[in-house]
Image 1: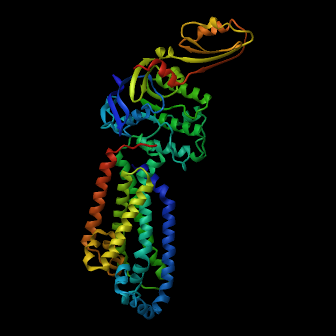
Image 2 (image 1 turned 90 degrees about the vertical axis):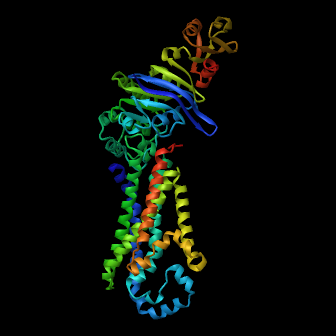
Image 3 (image 1 turned 120 degrees about the vertical axis):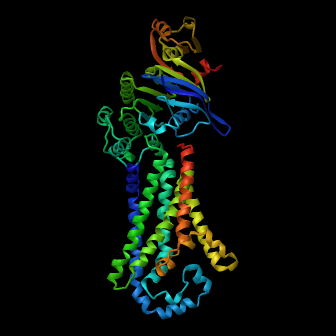
Length: 291
Length: 270
């Protein structure tokens, strides 16, 4: 049975079709990515799942229950992280934990999470950096050991070290059978920790893919500066586009597997090499334009 | 629900203390002046009689002869007709605005709505916290009359203050319900303050207009200030059923509308 299920979900704001017939299923114990550029409808979908806003059409079931009628029951089992978590400025982390655990009827592992994320619970929220606010919000979402985690833009404001700690925690949770729904506009993040992902664009799901399929949809921007003159013909291969060629340098756009290009580069003496990911919009235009 | 209730009380306690202290300071001022004013009552009565009769009707000097006859008549006009309702209105409109719209504006509503707590319970936790603030304010601000009166050796009638306390709480309940209803409808507390205070000012103006012209007399029935009259409550020890019915009925209607709207509305944080 699917843990999260949406059917023909629609939400319009005037003439804007924020979510326009979204269907997907999330299975138990998987990390499901919800990938799309800003304004694609990710947060609106999540807000409907959390019953903050009401769908114009369609239905959402979480743990087999209706997200509107059984909202309170569902939330006993759901941990939620907002995209830009808003907390009470005058309360400390400890007071937040006490407040939320008192509403939820207790917490199960707040201290463990505080230690893991190296969080100072005695500081007032107004003195915390955005990364520390995000840490606190994560602790609040995870501390009741929920069966389902709904995370909207998880790693906003987190430094790379903490991002790794969070990813590892999520993978541990997944291994314990917890279902994780993760919205992101960050393709590498989804590729790194998700099992499957739905791609949303302009309010519509354009694909639901296994992440191994998604990994094939990488686009790399490769800039190489060589010690000697380079022969551009060496880099004419499938999936590689030569964007710019100078005597000693090349700018390549590589779609999919980068290893063949790296092998070719290794034959030259390289002075400088820069490899970057293309933006999500670029990936979408390349792979999902017609859908 | 209990958690949200206590959290709200804690959040509002400073403003409550400030308002009570302001009230006590005003009471102290007025009560300390009363013996002097009472000794000059004759001259002051003559002065008040030079004002147009409609002025007395509009601003509560209905019976100038009785104005300084006792502490209750004096305080009902000096303190409880103007300053006290202003403080009460400010406290309750701010509590109502903060309850839902304030949480939406700050974005903290998402933190609350993400918990296993129904919107109904959330609303009532906030509403009951506002009601508690009302009762604490009315009780303390009235109770302090007694030690101050004793300190200045002024006679007072305890029972009259009970009428004022009941009437004040009913009036406050209606204001809190009005502000809470707008709080459930709007997403910015500024809008709640603006609309609630705007309506109350309109009601106040209508009550004055009604007293100025006989043909407009019926306008007074749509003003809270007709039903909440400290001169009648404190001065005359009277509380009629209509006051009770109007304030309770109005509050109930506001609560029902607030719940219907808040349960169905989209709560979207920018």
